[in-house]
Length: 360
Image 1 (cartoon, rainbow, N blue to C red):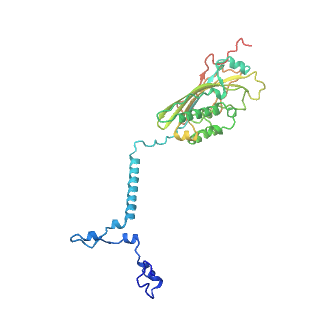
Image 2 (image 1 turned 135 degrees about the vertical axis):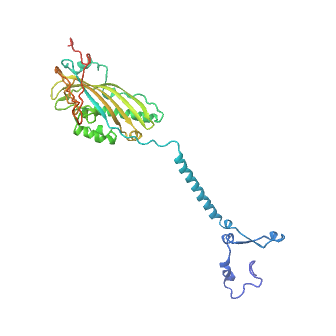
Image 3 (image 1 turned 45 degrees about the vertical axis):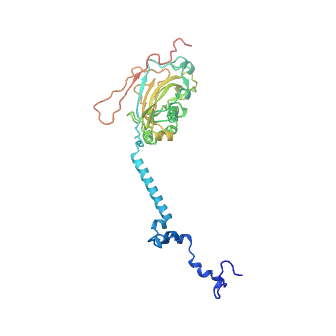
C-alpha cells in the first residue's frame, strides 16, 4: 500500500530514492521566500477588481536584520556625538594643575642678654617658659578637620597629618637634629621642590632660597650634642582653602632643645636652645594623593645664637656660660651687585631664658 505522500501508482521506475533528492535543491526555506522580489497576493486579494496577481516587496522588507543593524549604528553615533557635546559644554572644567612655588625662607639668630644659663635639663625646663610644653610629637597637635567648599573632610585631615609628619621629621627626629641623613624629610616634599632641597644641603647659603636650616632644624655634631631629654614643643596648625585646587596649612611652633658641648660628659652643664618656626605648607590634589607637601614659606627665629654666626648650614647655639658681649649683626652693602646676603639679628627678650637666680 502506498504511503500518504506517494503517487497512486507508486514511485516511478528509475527515480532514485522515491524522487525526493531530485527536488531537494529547489526546496524554498523561509529566508529564501522573504528575500524574493515578488510576492503573490492571496486568493482573497486577487478577487478584487483590477487586482494584480503579484506585488513587489520593498527592499526594507527583505532586509529586516540589516535595517536593525543600521538603526543600531545610528543610535550609537548619536549617543557618541551627545557625549562629546556635553564634554565640551560641561560647566565644571577640571582645575588646571598648580605650579609648585619654591621655598622662601629666613633664618634670624637671636642673641642672648648676658651669659647663657646652664644646669641640669630638668631644672632649666622647670624655670623656663617651656615648663608646660608637651614633649616630642605630642606637642604637634592636629585640630579637628572639617570639609571645605572643594575638599572633603578626609582630604583636609590628610593635609593636616602630612604637615605634622613633616614637622616631626624635620624638627624633632634625633637623627636629623644631629646632622644625620635627611632623606626622610626630602621624600615628603613634592618632587618639584627636591632639587632646591638638594642644592640647599650641597651648597647652603643665606639667600632666602638655599639655607638648609630653612627646611629643617639641625646642629653641627662636631660642636653640639643633644642631651637625652625630649624636645619640648607647643604650637598650632590651621588649614584654609586657597583655591578650588589648593589647601594651605599654616604651622606656628616653638621647639626647645637641651644641648651641651660635643662629647661633654654629664648633663649638668646643659643649656636650652629655642627655635620658633613658622611654616606654610601647600597641597594640591596630587600632593594629597601622593602624601607630599609643598613647603612654600619658612621663618625661623633661633637663639641664643651669635648675630655673626652663619646659620645657613647648621644652627650654631651659644652654650652654657657663653655671652654675646659686643656682638652685632654684620653690615649689608647696598652698592654690591650680584646675589645679596641680608644679615638679620634679634635680641632675646627678658624672661625667655631660664631664671636660675637663687635656685639650687
